[in-house]
Length: 343
Ligand code: WQD
Image 1 (spheres, rainbow, N blue to C red):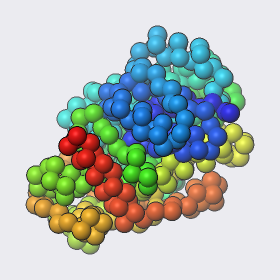
Image 2: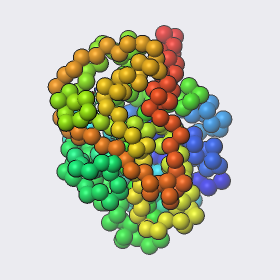
Image 3: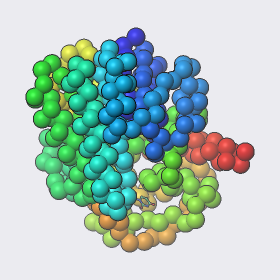
């Protein structure tokens, strides 16, 4: 079985992607320090995949420890690099945490890739690299605007670092996946987001609000130049996103990439406003979202959604789920979390 090293393999996207990779015949070795995830997710990954899951609880910024890991797994055919801090508002408050973690971890991993001659890397980039755009939907060659947050800046820099690295190396290839807004959970109800320090993205916050785990939900701004005044995002189901990674890895392993560093948008091409996301939550749960409209949030772009034609053509990727499936599966997972916390 081809071996793949997955950083952040216990995080939200990493755990779902690991399950999909295992189902597609890959041997997954995870590196996750649990700074943002919880060790108990391991039993969920094992339950869903039906296989033992190896995780090294190592910080990517700790070079000595990652060298040991690469000594053991130098036969890996690729690396998928998920491990990073991902909250836009937190990055505005703690920029240095974001620069040291997201950039430092990436550089160490690339050094290992070079030293141990690992041929392929897939990088978790983000639609936030586009900034505030003039023309929607965005294509991979749409011009990159100003990074609206330190988080977005780390993704722009990460892409540039990988492009420079790949150019400087022989026989190394990369895929940069620009994620739009991931949401939802594994349809079995056995795997979902289990963060260490509370949730930070729209969908889990909405789920907490309807389940009563949180007080009112706050809409961050209703005076944007959009159809209902709230920000627009392209929400993509976590299993569709996982599928994009498995396909990207195969694409690299089969030598199908036309470029040593290939970029793909991974969004479903549908813009959903915050108010529309509230409605979809109410439809999926049968419950009212208690919400208040507040001021704008620093670092937010107004509207963004993807043109995913390139991923469809070159990876054969097509989203299977929509916003209602996202909310339905997110709600199923929320109920599991609630039953777990009630013992
Ligand atoms: C979505 C919308 C908020 C919370 C994310 C990820 C980042 C990434 C790109 C890849 C915004 C609004 C939110 C709330 C609200 N890509 N909102 N009330 O900032 O688009 O960035 O997507 O992985 O990793 O963080 O996502 O979920 O924080 O916000 O009104 O309580 O919901 O203002 O318009 P964002 P988000």
